[in-house]
Image (cartoon, rainbow, N blue to C red; front, side, top):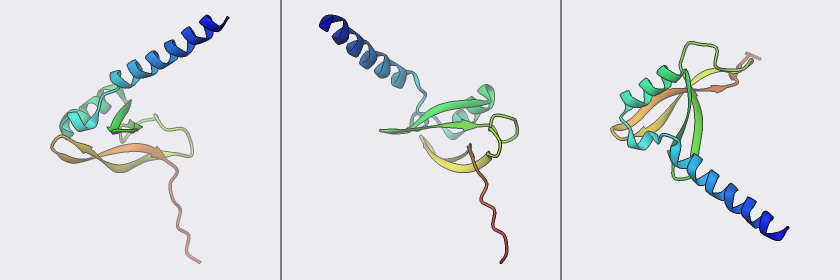
Length: 96
């Protein structure tokens, strides 16, 4: 039983490492490549730093769950910072 547990833990660690390696990294792409990837997939999970990743969506579409909407943010790319969209709840600023 102990061997099975060790094998399952080792398998989970390997799967996690492979899943991270398979995720595209914005820092290795140009801004145009990053935006084209998101547009072609409609939504994509991309690495943005050594320990960070997020899900990015195209500006117009239905990839966000209500009440979230596509909000512009900047991510690092090979040629500088790039504006892309991720789903966030809009901040409503009502006058007093």
